[in-house]
Image 1: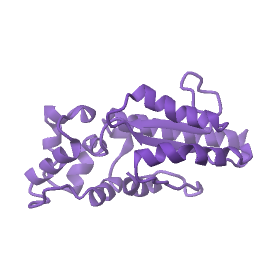
Image 2: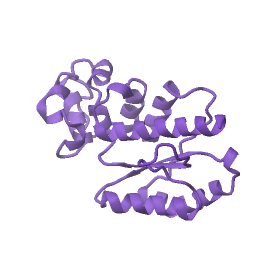
Image 3: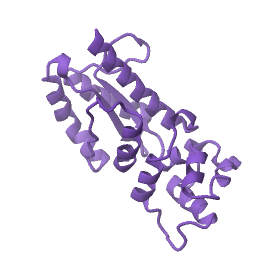
Length: 202
């Protein structure tokens, strides 16, 4: 995820925006260390406080329970979590649960896949891949099969995930991506940016 974001975000974020990706290495470490980081942010005066987008894999967890756990940690620190029912309220944090593997987001942009690995985009338009978040049997395995079927990455039994993430981060177009999970991430990011702009101008 980090490799993907480091390629994707500079293409769309204003250069004046200071940002960083924080990778905890595992979901368990994120959940363990998030409360302390959020408490640190909460101690910063509101006008200088960093805004946060928290991305966490669902894995086999209950999505509602997991999101509540993350939001509770943020609120306990004294931060304001985005309320989708009140678009006018200021907030410090947007939380997003990544429902499927990162490769589901790649399946969502067949044009970018075709540009990176010519001949592979056609396979992504098959019925089995039209809903990227519902692909069965592991999206990274399926993605490797698609690329190998078009003559790429032959001889590999594992997807080179970091290299693929960097490539897709440099090509993926958010506005045409059909992965609902990616759409939720992108909507959350844009809400965070708009909120930051509103607070700056307010």
